[in-house]
Length: 518
Image 1 (cartoon, helix red, strand yellow):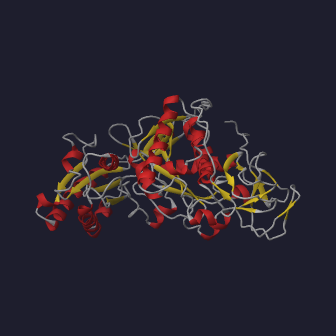
Image 2 (cartoon, one colour):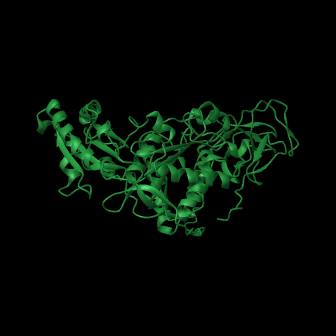
């Protein structure tokens, strides 16, 4: 990827009031709030009604059932005749027919490796994995042990445990709303099992205390499995029922936690190659700018990391729907492409049997930001994946066992999707947002990227990087991607993100609950 590589999307009206993303497009994007009657320079078109920033305007006649194009791709079909200058949105644009030619592995182009000695300062764990943080986790098998886990963490805080062990970043209770009232032999159980195991083994934890109730479906001994979950052995476990109730569990848990924290405190940051960074890529509260600014900038940074031997994870299967063909064509093999489509078909069936539809997205906030159909949203979301070959497809919370750009199946619900990425091994999260999502994901730091400068100005305390400058100041996607890559390395080395400074991470562990609650 040469430095002067140009990403399609910056041929615009001369006054930069609008942006045409591809020469084939029959709509442009408003770069500011435009009043009725405003003339679009370069297109000899006057708009019919006021159009908000980030929304679409027709630049030529579009007949009913004709395809509407953005990014040079189909984002839906006109539900009625659309005149030049009309606002193109929910009243005149629908899904239509969106069958795609997957063309598995036909456009796979390996990236040119970058050979450099770029390092970050990380925590080297037994077994070879590298952490970007040094937390201690209290992981629960079931909702019934969640309060006790919090009681132990609160008791440790009152006792000043972290003051005595300053190399530990914090004590994180990993509590959730499931673990019982479920089948023990279906995909829902397997998914939760992978999630809890992934957190217990995560390199951002220097040690784990595992707490169960005792009678739940997700049995503690099944998780431990007769062999150490963690190669370093820094894991203790107990059940409330065997300990004799809440107070005794807290007392023993606190004593065990002291031992774990003391051992985790011995860890120190030392140099590690950037190839050991695994980034989970997310977007939430997306808007009409997401696919223009922050997502392609993240895609460029993703390619920079992959070219250095690192790993990036794209997820949210329900939000690549309609754009999956752009990924299958980049697959390293036909089998990888088919694995992705198998997950899409699973989702179609999952929605059908639960009375939902794959096109019930975008959300109300997405629509206020200018996104109309899931096809449009998905095309922008896929931009986070850059141009690297797709080297693997994984189930939710399945351990990522290779390098490169990969896909992990997940819902589009951000906390749930990130939970799966962290369980799969992401030691850093990058999250783009146009409307202004706020969240954090202990034990993994989360960088927030603003898609537009107006939202960044309102919510600067929550945002780590303003990618809106790609439009507002003419910063190139390449330069923004380079800046983001540098920020990723600094955060991996210990620089705190805005969500960390604000204390996020206490409620964002959300396992994907599949199946009947019984």
